[in-house]
Image 1: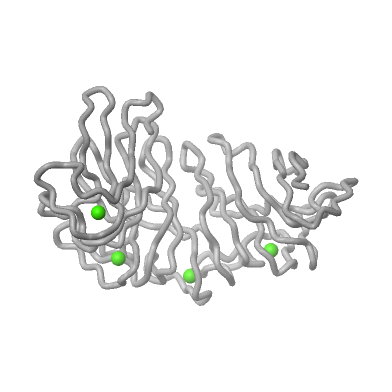
Image 2: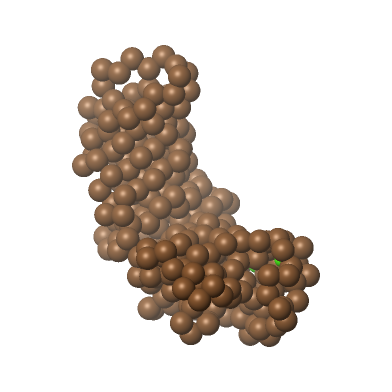
Length: 293
Ligand SMILES: [Ca+2]
Ligand SMILES: [Ca+2]
Ligand SMILES: [Ca+2]
Ligand SMILES: [Ca+2]
C-alpha cells in the first residue's frame, strides 16, 4: 500500500476481476486498486494488454507514493521483445503513471534478455529507483565471476538500467561471495541493503561459524558489515556460533531486527532455551529484545 493509503496492491487467483482480460495462467496475478476511484488495474499483464501474463506473479514491494510496484513472475510475455528462456521467475518494475513494465533482472548489457537463471523477492527504495533482489543467475553483471551455484544479492538502478552485485567477496569486487546470499530489506534511500548469507568472506570481519549471518551492504562504498556479531569480539564470528536468520531493517538503516540461534551475540546473557531469539542491532551493538521460550 502507498504511504497515503490510496494505492493498494493485491494478488489473486480469481480470473474475473477485470472485464476483457483473459487469464489462463492458473496462478496468482497482481492488481493495483485505487481507493480514491475504486478502480482496479492489472499489473502482471501480457504485452498485448488483453491478457494476464503466462505465468504466476508474486508481489514484492511498492514505492512510497505507490507509483512503482516491483514483483517476481514466471511470465515470459510481459514486455514485447524480451527473451526469457530460464523457466524461472524474473523481477519486473511497474510504472503506474506510464503503465509501463520494465525487466530488472536482465543479462549484463542486454536490457531485453533475462538472466540465465531465476531472480526473486525484490525490495524497492521509497522513490522507486532502486530494486534489491536475490538471483541465481550468473550473468547479471559484466565481468563478475560467480562460482557459488546459489543465490546472490543484486541491486538494479532504474536510472542507469544496470545491475550491481551486492554479495561480493571483500577481497575481489568482481567475484561473488563463496556461498549463497539473499536480500532481506532495503533502506528508504536505497543506499543500504540488508542481507542474509552463508558466505564467510562477505565482510572483512572474521566469520568462521559456517552458518548464516545477518549483514548490511553499503551501496556507495560496496562494503558489507556483519550485523549478527558476537559481543566483545569486534565483529569476529567464531566457530560454533549459531545462525542468524530473518532480518528487518529500519527505513534509515540505523536499526536491525534479527532472529538468531547464537547464544553469544550479547555478553552476560544466559541463553539456554535452545531456540532462536530476537535481537536488535544498533550502531554495531546488539541487544536481546525478546526471548522465545
Ligand atoms: Ca491468474
Ligand atoms: Ca523467467
Ligand atoms: Ca550465485
Ligand atoms: Ca557466517
